Image 1 (cartoon, rainbow, N blue to C red):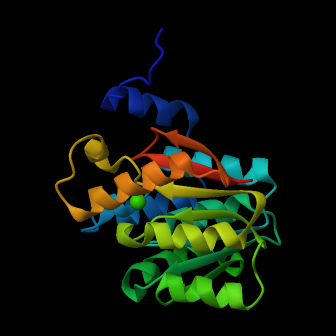
Image 2: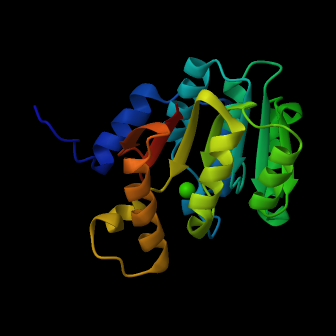
Length: 219
Ligand code: CA
């Protein structure tokens, strides 16, 4: 019994997956297809995906956006959790990576819910704001270049409705954030975490799931 989070070793993590993971076959296949990718570590863990899907349902979300799609596991997971008329705006710059996603989105029958925009995400988000989409989204997932997290956050905070949720991936950065920063990404994540802690515009939780998942609920 403890007041702090458990240390999760491989055996316990496997137990968590064995006892709780419920994946669509397309999700399992997409993880398999990404396993040997040189940047496989950019994919979110499946237990985190399932948690995000639960959040989508709790929120009653219909419109979601993500910054950083990679090979499409998070977009697939969110799209599966959204209702039939749900929509995911997926922002990425890589045709090479996101092309891997398409057959799995089709296999799951959710490709019609996912709008992939290949362009710098700040550009895409600004265009949506200009198009009058402020307050139109229920959920935003930020999982891209760390240097721009704070800029993605400010856009997402406008795009998400009051009571909507913004999730940031990798906010513990392998544990590096708790030590003096040795690189620029650690430094920006430390600054972001400190900023969010003080930010009165949101309710906040920093979860130790995956590589750290920060949840910010817009007030
Ligand atoms: Ca990530």
